[in-house]
Length: 410
Image (cartoon, rainbow, N blue to C red; front, top):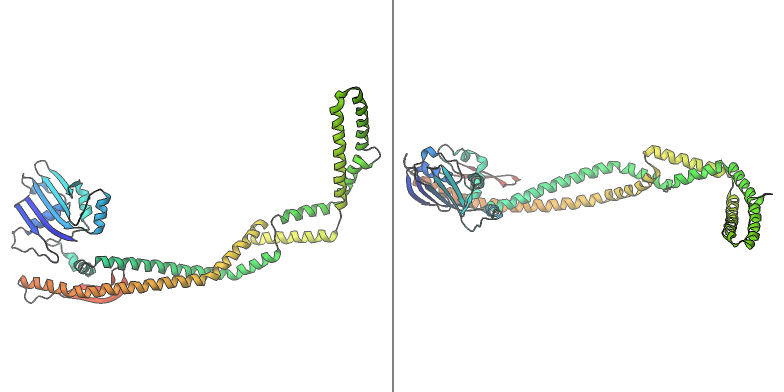
């Protein structure tokens, strides 16, 4: 990316000026008052700087700046519907009489504020007393890479570096998680063994409570069933006997009046239901028994379940579900080593790739270094500074997103 040309019309003392810029270093020289600051001023205006109307004559000012934009800038413009190709044409039209300003990018009018924001990362101007950034060693690597057209390669280094950082964080987080889980492993295995040994079942607690209630009230239940059986079918004057007589009476009545058929059928149905009820209660009574050993065993089991619930502060149903959870956790613990090994492998591969890419960038910088040294030194000699020498020192450093080099200009 770089400025290729500047055209200025009617800017202060400049009537019509066109400058072409070439790749590499371009130096504008001249005596004091020759107009160097006007060129810088016009460049600033083209890049969206605020207009000082008091400096301008009445004539319309037009400044056209042509440059080669980076891919990121093209994408921004395409999203806004502004077509781009290999060149970007920025035009600023100023009308001092009306104090109106219009800005264009590739013939599409844009706000001056957007123009300034858009161009700020594209062009950096250094006028008198504004060159302090050149004295900051932290920026020297940026100048070298920009000159050598190494920014694309440096972006690749940055991308891999950030990936390495992410993998390092994931690797250490996985190891930390593994350590924390392993601290709980012994307790989890103990708990799993205890819960499996307990042979817990969902609904078991309710079943035991019901069975304990039956065994504890065996005599009362047995007496109640016997009383009902006697009243229904087995006593001297049972419900069944009374209904049987009623059925016989209605049968005789139905012979006289058929309208009694429905009532007779109801009683016949009741007799059938009483027989079924009697058989059912009889079976229930036969199944009733009292076993003090079973009662004691069930009470002990209930006590054990209550202790287990109190110990873990969970219901039996929750403890049954937890068996699967613990088993899954223990399986994960067993897989931690494999996962850590896989993550470490990914990290080492990324670190190797980062080192290779950073080494390639470093080698290219060393080649570009000589070219820039010679070009700037030559320009200094052209300016009459025959003994001046420009030198770039490159030292190895810890790899970061800009590579593995410390770069400093001398």
